[in-house]
Image 1 (cartoon, rainbow, N blue to C red):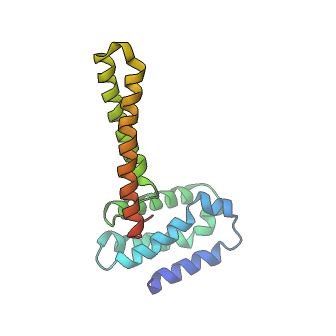
Image 2 (cartoon, one colour):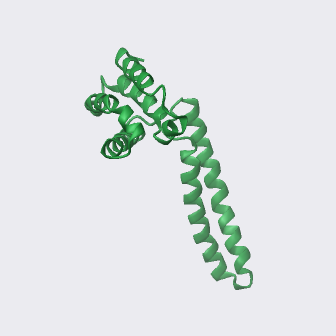
Image 3 (cartoon, rainbow, N blue to C red):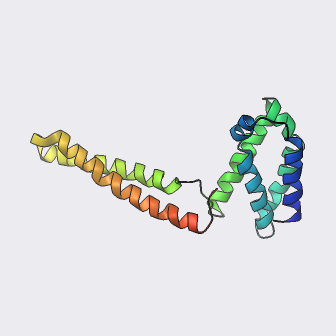
Length: 160
């Protein structure tokens, strides 16, 4: 962790030492701190990260107001967190826990339902069973492939 990230995280800690844990979890403060460290790490090679260092400093200067008062500063903070998280996901390959399992399960479920619908129309006597078979046939492999990718992301320590 660089000196910049350490100073920013210490500033956040000092400004929010009296804040409620519920508010800090709601505002995803732990994720914000981790992303500050990542921004510092990648800022030498990534222009987006370098550009957002300035916005992070501005957000941290008003972080106590953001936590205690809803309004414009909180909206700006939410937008900043969203932009940084999306950038970390797209460019630096950091993902939330179970990201692939959820997405692949959904895709498998939809594909399985389509397959089940086709089976339901071809074998009309067993319509409900065919739809269930298609659903299971899509959902289970989707979850397995997603879990494999999630395990790979976890082993590379690229969890958001």
